[in-house]
Amino acid sequence: MKNYKKILLAAAATLALGTSAFAAEQLKIGTEGAYPPFNLIDASGQAGGFDIEIAKALCAKLKAECEVVTSDWDGIIPALNAKKFDFLAASMSVTEERKQAVDFTDAYYTNKLQFVAPKTSDLKTDKESLKGKSIGAQRATIAGTWLEDNLGDVVDIKLYDTQENAYLDLASGRVDGVLADKFVNWEWLKSAAGKDFEFKGDPVFDNDKIAIAVRKGDPLRDRLNGALKEIIADGTYKKINDKYFPFSIY
Image (cartoon, rainbow, N blue to C red; front, side, top):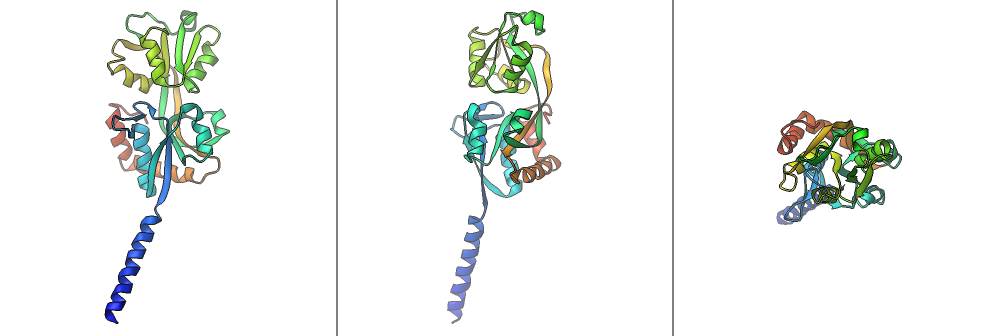
């Protein structure tokens, strides 16, 4: 009888452990995977970057098991709303238009926009000087929208499906300059491909709030906000920031 009771207790303990493990919340992180250093696919085929590390730190605070799902930038909000993932960590700017389709958490960093062009170029970034110039930007981004709203009547705007393709055209001379997030430009300028290029002019938009997107009305938003406060308070955020930048982007 004693042995029988031991077997029952062992079975109950095993079941409890299995149930506990099985009950861990499963969440999917959506990202583009083509926007270094914020989100990218590394040499081993794994998603990484600042956005992903922040997202995984939030998952740890939520005690959730998270996996990363990539999506083309143009369709990333529809993919979120189609439930292909649970929240979106892809350096997305908070805009009034996007707030009609998704809810945003508090900002996890603040961005600026700045032009880059060849070091040999005397590109000036005032409207009069840019007249007739060809400027590239990624499609469906704040940079692209800013160009259309502010310089659409004087500049030949070329929009690209990825930031990488915008840089490729800049490197080949097919555009005179590129407008993009300052921190993304900063990363590219450090690379072999960007060594012959530099920032031009001052940032043209310096209060671009970047946040995580969730589906409208999803209570996950408040939980992510709580987790964000925790990783800022306990130093986790700073540790991730310092891995990518020698300055704070928060």
